[in-house]
Length: 557
Image (cartoon, rainbow, N blue to C red; front, side, top):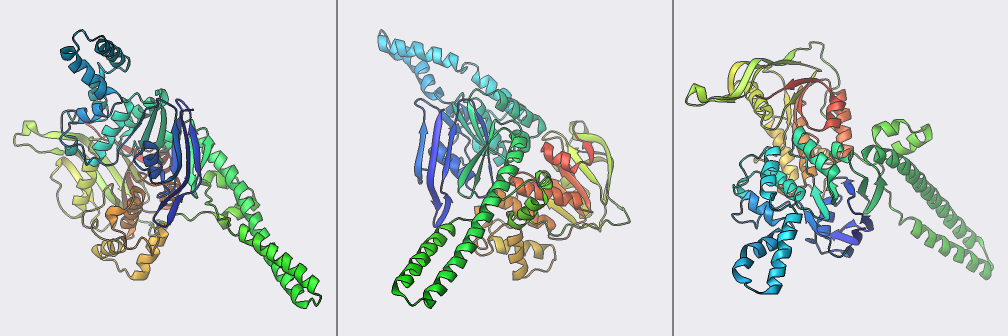
C-alpha cells in the first residue's frame, strides 16, 4: 500500500461535501474515480496533492512516495515554454540537472560532491532523463501538439494545456499519478495512446473520468456519493453489476428503516394515549419512560439520510418486479431533456446535403491553398443520424461552422469546392464545448433567460426555475451564481439547456459527453435514441457512438 486516506469532514461554507471518505491505494493500481457533478472529485484530488489542507482527517503516504498531479490552473508559470514546464514537473529532474550542470565546475577533489555527482548521473540515467526531451516532443506530436514544445505554455488554449498536463504525468515516473478528466480534448487515436500508457504504467494512477473507454481498463472504481467513498473491484462493466446489487440491498435497508420509523411513531402515539388514560402514578411513569425511549429511537432513525440510488438502464431492466417498483420510488433525480421531439415527421425532408465538398483555407496563391478534406458527400434527413469522424484537425469543427453559416444564408469562407446546403427553415440546436462569451458574465438564471430571448422564445421566471430544476441546479442557491463559477459538469448542463431552447429539428453535437457524469450521459443517450429529428455528431466516446450509431462520414486529408 502506498497511500491511506481518511477524510472525516470537508465542507464548503455550511455545506458538508465529504463526511466519511476512506480509501487506500496499492502500488501500480489503476483506480477510476466517479461521482455526480459537484460531489467533490476534484476537491479530493486537491487534498491528495496537498494543495487543499482545509479538511479533517489524514492522508498518509508511504515514506519516499512521489505524487504528481495534473493542474487545472497555470497562473504562476511565467514565460516557461511547454518543454520547460513539463521538465520542471518531473520529480527529481530539476535537482539532478542542477547537480550535473554545476558540480563539474565546483567539486574539484571534494569526495562528497564527487559521490553526489556520480549518483546523480546514474539516477538521471535510471529515470530515462537523458532521452526525456525527445520523448516529450514525440508525445506532444502524438497528441497533435506538433511544434509547441518551445512555445510559451500561456499561449496554448485550455484544451492544449490539459493535454500538456497529461504528457507531464505520463513522463513523471512517479509512484502515484492523479489525473483529472484526461481525455476530454483527445481524439480517438490520442485516447488509445493514453489508455495504452494507463494499462502499462508502473505507477499507481487515480483518474477522475466518466469516459467509459478509460473506465473499462481500470482495476477498481471508487465512487464518491452521499459524502463517502464506495469501492468496486474491477472495471466499468463490473462496477455496473456490483452497483446494481449493492443499490438493491441499500434500497431494501432504507425501506426497512422507513418502516421502523413508522412503527416507532405509532408506538409513541400509543404510549402517549396509554399514559393519558392511566391513573396509577407508577403506570404513568412506566409509559412515560417507554415514550421517551421511543422518541430517542425515532431521533436516531431519522438521522439516517436517504442515500442516492442510481442503476444503469440495462441492469435496471433485469430487476424483478418488486425491486423495480422500489427503484422507481427511490431512484435519484436525473436531468430531464425537455424539447426533444419524439414524433417523426412523415416528410423525411433533407436537412443537410453535402456534394463533393472540400473545406480548407484560401491562400493568396492557389497553389498554397490548404484543404482539410476533399470529395466528401452525404445527406441527412429527419430521423437520421450522421457521425463525423476524424482526428483532431481533420475538419470536423470547420464543417460544423460551415453548416451553421449556410443555415444563415452565408457562403462559408472555408468552402473550397462542391455544394453545401442546409434547409433554411430547420430549427437547429447545437451543443458546443465552450459557452458563448455573451453569457459568461451573467448569473445562471439571467443567462437562461437571455439565451431564450436570443432565440426569440418566450420565457418567464417560472420557466427559468423549472429548467434549473430539470437540469439539477438548485433554483434558489444556484440562480445568482455567475456562469464563470460553474463547474465543468454544470456548464455542460447549461449547454444542454441552450441546445434545446428552440425545440430543434436538427441537433449538432460536439463531444456532448465531456464533463457530464454517468447518469446524465445515460439519460442523454436514452433521450437521443427516442429523438425524431436529425442528429449530426462528433464523439470520441466509444460507448456513446455504439449507443447512437448512424452513418459514419470520414474526414481528413
